[in-house]
Length: 217
Ligand SMILES: Nc1nc2c(ncn2[C@@H]2O[C@H](COP(=O)(O)OP(=O)(O)OP(=O)(O)O)[C@@H](O)[C@H]2O)c(=O)[nH]1
Ligand SMILES: C=C(OP(=O)(O)O)C(=O)O
Image (cartoon, rainbow, N blue to C red):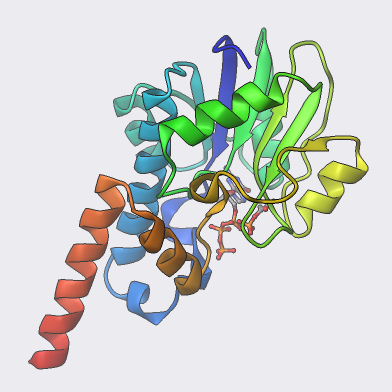
């Protein structure tokens, strides 16, 4: 896919995000900081791959401010938001070229994987990369002029396949970093094994040293 595309990410209000991360992150604002760090590392990889039109949809002014600082185009989610797919559709509205929908929680993402997947997507009207579990979707690429309604959520890989999107690398041999979205502590361990981006690495270091200090008195 050429770089004349809009890359669209959606992020909930930080205080509501990633409720499945577990106890360790329920202390102070650790979870919010980790979510913001994972988002930052995701955007850094996209920008590092040379994609400049990055749209971020969120109801949270803090997320929108961070998006602006990262060089993204912040889009405020309308009040009474209707969920992730409505937020993504809102962000993509008016995009003149192709649209790439990307999860915002890919802390191990590397620019080369993102660029490589978009090159593979070029051969298709609509293509997606499944997550590491094979059930979800990390990335959905829709070519210019094609109308396709994103169906992120539980079992989104099957939903996207059923709606005619082509699964890129169905053997799941490539792009482990791109497939590793983080919802649970286990996902976070999987991402750490691949190599985390600098912001997420730093956020985890703080969390772990706080936890050790509390444990050791
Ligand atoms: N703007 C916006 N983003 C959303 C919405 N729902 C989910 N997202 C984002 O979509 C991505 C995928 O959602 P999930 O992986 O379920 O993340 P989550 O809802 O933060 O996680 P849990 O609380 O553990 O379910 C995350 O980046 C969320 O922040 C929504 O209604 N609006
Ligand atoms: C929204 C999705 O993922 P998750 O809720 O697992 O992050 C998805 O894979 O479509």
